[in-house]
Length: 301
Image (cartoon, helix red, strand yellow):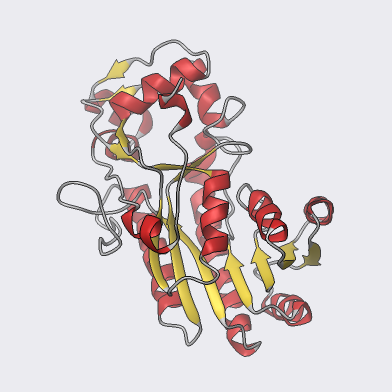
């Protein structure tokens, strides 16, 4: 199968390309940098140079690839999580405007299936774990709400398309080239004592290893269209995963701070993620994608 990946040189793009090629697919990755192009070629993919915000360039690159399937992994996220709030407007522009260019190009080029990156961690559920019927938390804290509204638009766009639409609600990525890895940005903050447990620490987080997310994305090439939560089996509260993560990366136990202290120092989003975040269920992906994620690594340490 011929597959076109936008965001192919990013954190998930690299293991995704490797898995696609391992399974015999022909891959073209889109990037706007020469460094990204070299990385794509090194992985065995063809490199298409185009800025996602240039609609004509995107369509030209996609048409030349002859792709049957497009995988949209477009992001513009910082290497350091401290810079996330500053990066969100640009990230939203790339995903909404750039992804819109890609979606329209895919429709014009006769692409059969479009797979869209979405969020499995900004979901709204009254109790328990969120399944795929759960809406995104558009009424949450300001930054979370902004992201949830963006993901809601992305899902609506792909699911209303004449193409076969698939929205993959990934959990927080961990593993190589992510924030949640010994050399990642969150690990650095934890070692510096700058990532405390907020309040009761009962916000529930769903993670997924970057390679497991890549495997599930390849499985989505032939699955029924629709929404899938791509998360591991271990959704856990901040009060559980954060001390375990700290131990795994050689950091001291995280401090506990009140909600008000966190609000003053880090803002409402930090409080929301610490005490209100909802975990997600992967039951549908397990059944329909044969998804078998690994255990959350630091809980095994």
